[in-house]
Length: 130
Image 1 (cartoon, rainbow, N blue to C red):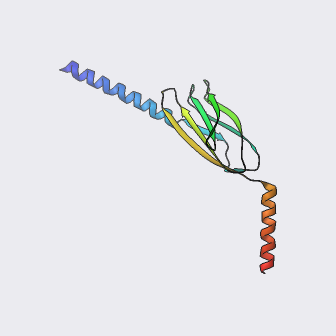
Image 2: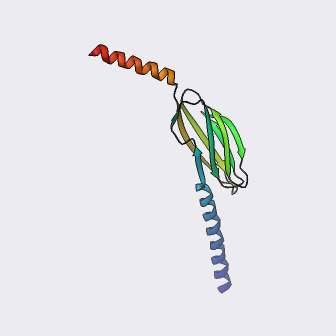
Image 3: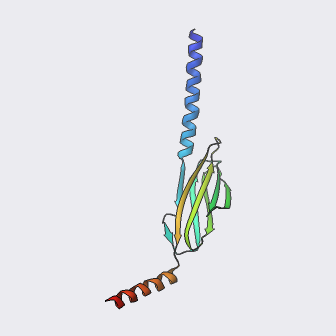
């Protein structure tokens, strides 16, 4: 009976260890860039860090753009060409444990010339209303 109790306790310990390791892996994903939610630059640098030996698949507005096999440092970097307006960047990360987790970020590409023209029109409309 003692042997059965020891085996059960050891089995529970191993399961707890496995689930704890998986949970930690899921949470270890950091996006360094982009830091802002808007930009006027069409080419956007992307970088971050995750578990070593993970695979990061990057989607831009629903289209697969990049598959990155992360090395021992866990750091990854690339660039994306944004479209005017709101761009949804999705990171689908597969950790070495086999767990896959999805993270996303939205970045607004601002056309400064268009924005300046719109602001000028708004100012003219306000002056006309006065």
